[in-house]
Image 1 (cartoon, helix red, strand yellow):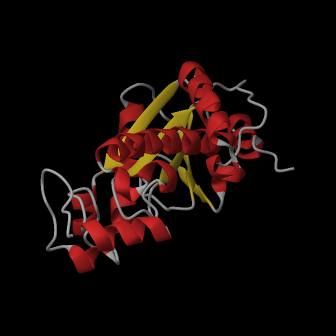
Image 2 (cartoon, rainbow, N blue to C red):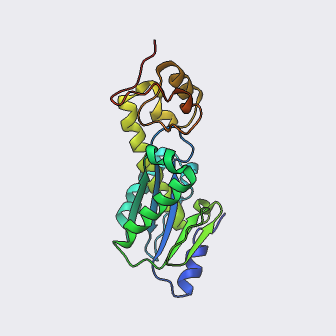
Length: 214
């Protein structure tokens, strides 16, 4: 099994005090924002079973979310909406959202070091980008859970307004049912116009509700 405390332990041994783990959710969906989280855990934090949020059941993610929110020294959320994703591109939008999450943490605590899942960031404090970091670092794993649960809850709210897209189940990803709904009903103002196949229907947007083309 992966030692999720390895990176944090090595940094603590070097005298680092407050380590932020950063991860994102929502680079692939056709709709909604990209959400990031930065989480600073106590040095003695232990949570058996915590790992990459994609490997956890929804019930387990929600359970871990509550524990992390209660026990973390600081939690910051960063979010870039669909319109800005279209303007920047998803890579730059993700970097911006990560910076926002980190800034929100630094308003709460004097952050010393940042561990990031894969993406390189230029900050005025030391950072380390770790490939598949959400399965290798307890801090990044915690951030992945916070980001995932936060974005999923946003999709549940959108699903109430636009049930035909099945967002409660696909979370905005391009499933067969989601794409078929776009072809049938058009798109909402929350869809990402720079993404295929959404861009094919960019002239069929209604700012108040989805367009029905029947």
